[in-house]
Amino acid sequence: MTDMLRDCLQRLPLIAILRGMKPEEAPAVLQALAGFSILEVPLNSPRPLESIAYLVRHAPSGVLIGAGTVLTEAEVADVAATGAKLIIAPNCAAPVIAAAKARGMIALPGVATPTEAFTALAAGADGLKMFPGELLPPAAVKAWRAVLPKDTLLVPTGGVTPDNVAAYRAAGADGFGIGSALYKPGLSRDELKQKAAAFVAALR
Image 1: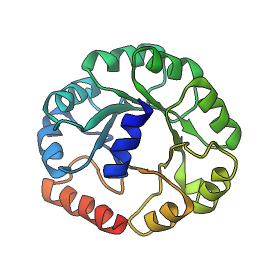
Image 2: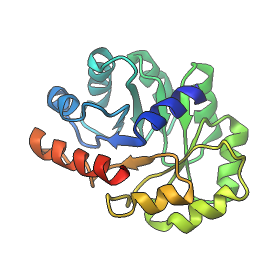
Image 3: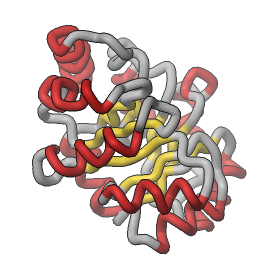
Image 4: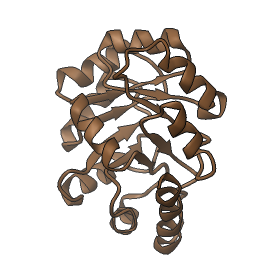
């Protein structure tokens, strides 16, 4: 499953975090984010499992759909029932990682220190969500790269903008979780397309 995550990040190293999206908005959001290879619906969104199930059914082949803010083993089971393959958390909880791996899912836990990073990898994490990104600048990515296994996937999340993605990439980031800088509830489809295009252009 790590290879699936790696392949998606290599195609486009952006995880669209759709916090607050309602199921009714999912069709327009999916159209606006054509070309994105990873879409995340946090579980503290309105009726998140409905949105996740819609994206699983309607996203193009090869697009990885997941849930964010997954805090318990029971929530992992709920997400698995939708057919989604990705479990993202703001924290490093070994039982949640284990529950995801037991169901053949990708686990991307949140870590804020090298100690948490090594703990998550030992628990079976497929990659590491460096969170909050505001407190983990490119210099932190570079420092972690010096000590973590060289093939570890690092995904800074929070505070990432088109202005700093190049610095993060140069430091060794494999991808980025993009939240409010990309999507906010009520954003029009055209506005979302423009924000997405700005991130894609910054990467290139």
